[in-house]
Length: 171
Image 1 (tube, rainbow, N blue to C red):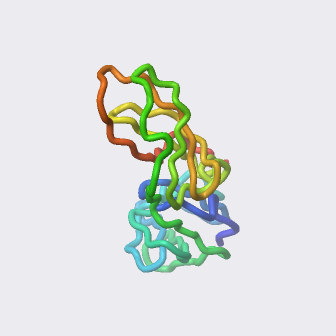
Image 2: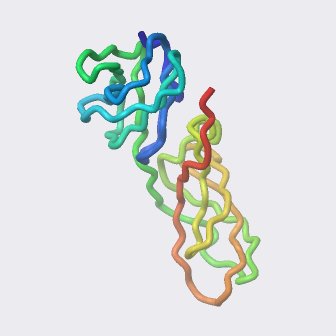
């Protein structure tokens, strides 16, 4: 049986594992998880009461989570997993700063989530300036804040927001 899944919500990026708690999990090559209509994926056995599953694809919205020990008989989780839409950017302020860095930058868009929801999923939010990443703070679902890093050369750099899986917080 499945008692719970954690986290119950993931951002719109692939490759983030979820923890499935329950009873009767068996270490087996047939231990699998299925997310909605996607094909079953191998599960990582932790104990008879916990496994880890990594969705390979996602579509924004809620999907069912099911588990099998024998690659045939699936049991559904009591709650659905929610996939957020992938983050999108719409603006940045200010658009200029000194090459020495340390300019507070606010990036607007959608789908940034909250710091708590990202931390629960083992994610960190970063602002990327050219090829340099700095830690960002989600002010809310539509704005992030970060400080520009020192640049080695003057000129324009591409700016983006990056979600990165950094560690597992599974219990």
